Image (cartoon, rainbow, N blue to C red; front, side, top):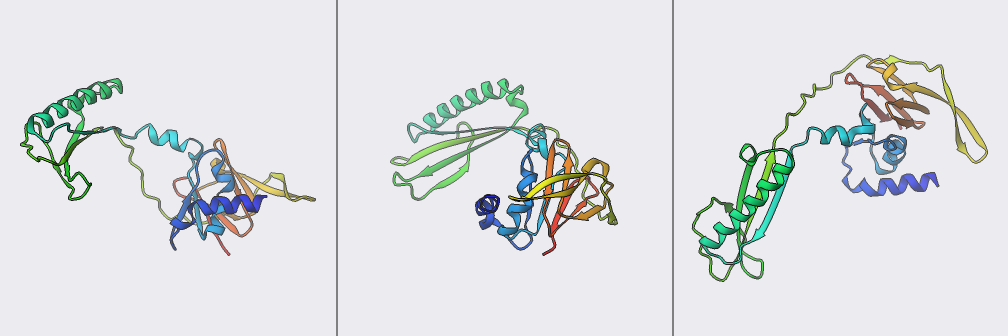
Amino acid sequence: MERAYFEALAHAFAHLVEEDSTLVAFGGAGPMSAVGAARPAGVKRVLIPRMAAVFSAFGIAFSDIGKTYEVGVPEPTTASAAATYDEMLARARRDIFQEGYALDGCHTEVLFTVEETDGSSVETRPYQSGDAVDFPGKQVSLRLSVTAVLPHPELAPDTDVPEIRVASNETRPVRSAPDQVDKVPVFVLSEMPPGGCGEGPVIVEGPFFTARVLPGWQFRVTASGNLLLTDTH
């Protein structure tokens, strides 16, 4: 059952794997299954951020606020396009205000698209209110993108640190077969120094996540405190 589960996970992303691909595992459960799915997909490296358990929430906390609107212009005329633009802008102003921002302080981009009724001969260009629009017999639309840019953290690049062999004083029983239970060493990510390393099978506990390092995999703590796993087979 476990092997079938790993292979099903691997099948979901194997078509994206290249020779130097690294699989990033996050969430509370992702680190448990990452290396098991990586090997059948042909991935040799797995990166588990130290904030894996709250990776999505951490990222969205400083992601830009964005709104996109795309509306067909009822008639391919200058007046119809200007009226459609004004309606889109009024809607965007309300929506971005509900997010806590003023439209005047946001980055906006408006694109104007012209195409034949059969969908061919598409032309897209920037649009400003009042631009001349005269395309009889064609379909036209406006696309408005609004972005409220938030402050982004500065992430320091990772650096090489000397490897330090670490030892564990704790073990945990893990069932490896229906009738076999192994005592597997347990490490705490926050207690290992940068460069701390070892080989599986081990369990690495992070803040609110558990990573399973299978046999044939090496683990190492990076300078940034993340966990890097490498397939040594």
